[in-house]
Image (cartoon, rainbow, N blue to C red; front, side):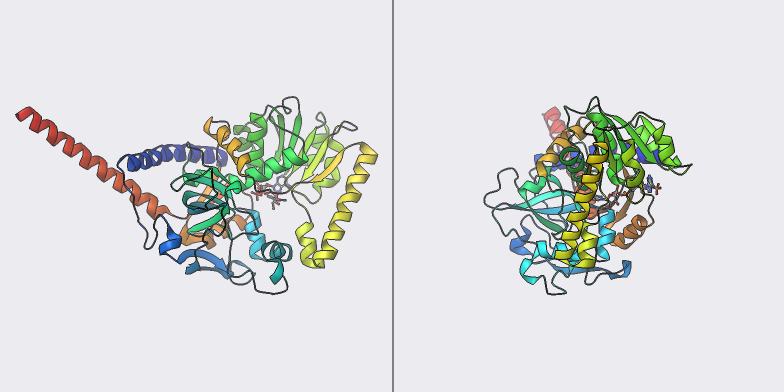
Length: 437
Ligand SMILES: NC(=O)c1ccc[n+]([C@@H]2O[C@H](COP(=O)([O-])OP(=O)(O)OC[C@H]3O[C@@H](n4cnc5c(N)ncnc54)[C@H](OP(=O)(O)O)[C@@H]3O)[C@@H](O)[C@H]2O)c1
């Protein structure tokens, strides 16, 4: 039922999108340049210094989220940067963790090495890792984008996030948004896509041309990363087995999973041991999974286990940057050595990697219908805390999206409708005049 709802809402979103795309095209044709928001214009850095955003001023629970209209607009400060007006953003488990301070030490070092000892230098901090929106300004050396382009991107966790009116990224982190998706649908994909691609390609050694004879197991296949990875691997021709709860089976089968193991009934390891062994395992669950999953890989064949649940940031938070990094590196090396020597299988960690060109490939798969967005829930920009609450409850079935600029989208629709009506009326008048003459 749940999965049917998700798929149905996906289809519905497609229909809405077709309308929205039509509107934008019509706007362009009508030669209109519109400025709807209080102080939003085509080049905000020149005329506007503040923007709306959800920020945190300290780490903690949901209460630390604060709406403000007084965040400094992130201006284009280097030649390769683009400023994007955010239309939709989506949430990931990382947002919940970062709200609570996860990764603070390492991310602070990445943001501003000189202020790493300053306890509060990262605040006010904007969360939100996915963006779908429109380019409003480009640095002088930007070659792939121009103002007005519809784009999507995953915002690296060391940069100010997308729960804001504007976000600024380098052009290498950005990609043209799939034409077949609305901003809401598009915002559900970039972060999980960049993560899944980085894990499967860089750590897993898979690609479009090498996956057709591969057996892949995805644990936690019903969440954000899982629902994307299932579709990507099916598009590449792999055989995909998924672990998930009973009520997510319809969803993952609908996305193409060949075999599904319900981890809530009995021991998933026992059920999986009955199956042919795997070439690659993508672990989205972590914890105990790692203990039994290694034995499911084809031994002495170069098979790989990749987990996305890694202790790096937890260790740097609790032990400090040097000890945490050293301890983490040591743990990884030990596990990798043990597994390669005892079974001939690779033990690896997967990480999100910002990668605009990778999103270009995903765009093609989306526009050819091979990858669908899976939007489980949508929230208006006024209800960001509620969106966090939803995510925090767990049991995700795809993604939770925040509509950031819906007023603009709605008003654009209305304007286009008015233009259409006026055009039709004047055409009719012209025809009547011609007839009379
Ligand atoms: N290393 C990185 O750079 C990186 C990047 C992205 C994500 N991650 C991590 O990767 C994990 C997955 O991310 P996500 O965005 O897909 O999370 P998500 O959207 O929250 O999805 C997790 C999914 O796993 C299911 N699940 C929970 N326990 C399970 C179990 N024992 N067996 C099978 N399925 C189970 C959940 O549904 P039910 O509880 O209803 O079964 C849910 O559908 C998270 O821990 C995230 O923090 C790491």
